[in-house]
Image (cartoon, rainbow, N blue to C red; front, side, top):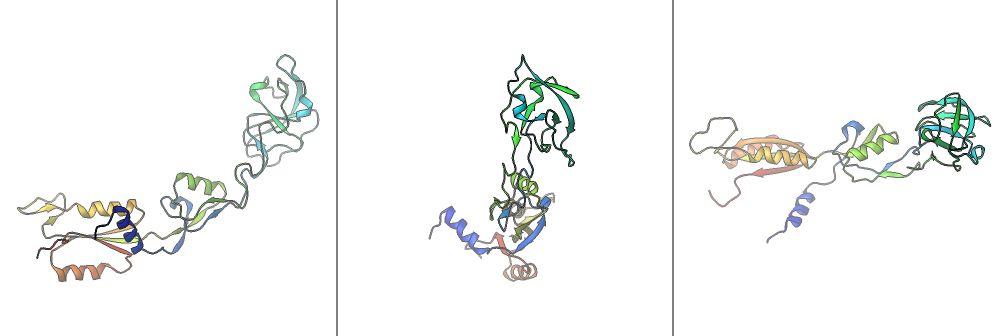
Length: 256
């Protein structure tokens, strides 16, 4: 019976059942299969913040501001990203603010620094924003409780990034299957060894072991097993404990 590549792939995949779950540090999760949905424990953003470098303002106080007729207001405070003690914005003033910094209570818009004269004590604002302009709300990107990565996903850079962004230091993944790669053939020798007549360099083992690692498994390479049934079986028994799958190369034809 002839199998297609897809059919053979399905048969081989069925040989290895779902692996048990283990929890690993996020930094070690690349290439691992996620065992459970990752659910955001926080919203992104988790606080109302500025989307621009500029000035946090009360939009109503800038009505009518233009390039030719700016509104000039005092700068009450500076709010860099990371500041946690942000005071409320007093009426009739603005706060100089950086991208990602928390909006002060009372402010409802941000005027980009490019639309001002950049003042640090008093600032001329040449733009009349609408409420909500350049302000990022809580949960605008991700809402708390939302699934951010589905179970079964192979964790790569993007998935690791979102897991870190919602505060996950560890993630549940499937244990990597252990695959014994067993290369047989009395004619085989290690690369770098001088060849004698009738010998060839063994290449299947390293290639298959690399393929196992590329596919997410852990490869154990057993090489240079001679073409002898009893020795083959003996070597296999010595190595098979803790192995999920055995891949052999060589000795697959109908000869003696």
